[in-house]
Length: 340
Image 1 (spheres, rainbow, N blue to C red):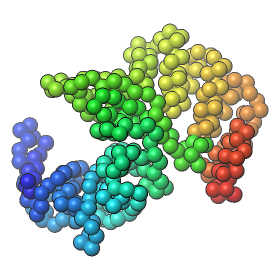
Image 2 (cartoon, rainbow, N blue to C red; image 1 turned 180 degrees about the horizontal axis):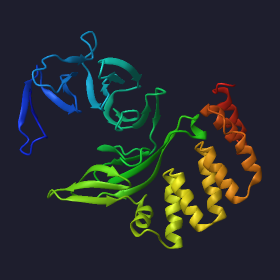
Image 3 (cartoon, rainbow, N blue to C red; image 1 turned 135 degrees about the vertical axis):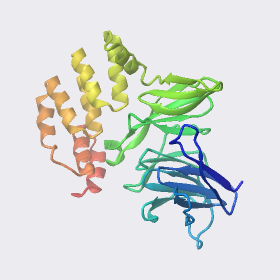
Image 4 (cartoon, rainbow, N blue to C red; image 1 turned 90 degrees about the vertical axis):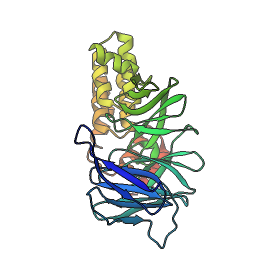
């Protein structure tokens, strides 16, 4: 179990490119276009995909515990988790440690987005967290399935996560900025879809989970959180109730521009108000201002026009909390802003 065979996908018959032996039992192999990472006996070996490249970088170093439990890789980063609760980011071009997060217990699984700028990890207690390495902050994912098998990031919608266990596809939406989360965002569950027996999810794309059946067939499973959106897109339009459901689904998914387009079709003042409030809570001042203008609320339009130039997310969130008369929350946000 210490030998790995590398095949080229550039030719139809996928010929063997080269093979390599490792010193210990190979537990996991991942690769991108340029590098391969091999998890073996608690350490990760990284080398290029060039034949004859005998050099390898090993993480963690010899002076650290060999306790790597899981790893993942993007185009630029290798990320690995350990039994002692650390998540380390390695910049592949320089093999340099650029970030390390310490969790309260061991890391069991890692699920990054395409660029690894956001990461879902599962710890030893089966709890799920969304980690943002930019601000070095992990937030718990509410109602995370304890028997989760995999987390898929929607390839067409960067803020949508699909978590599946053996029976259910659970959909979450990630907000990059929100008034209730100190301007740094959070994760919210928005719905579930039953997973048919015998299906293995492969990827999520624009509200559809592409799965493989036991017989090898590819099956497209539409998510219940997107069904009205998919119906309107397929038909190029719909009746009033379907459009209204489409609006609310876009709102739940934080697709405010699409929700605006549907609201314009329905010309319903209540929908404009819902859109304005949701956009404002997610710090989208420009769209909220448009929705309030369409509703005819001159006071809110004037108030929001004064907030356009604020760049500090916490400061902006504090002013928005004031507009909703949430004074205690506004005070908390102002104190952690650049202008307390």
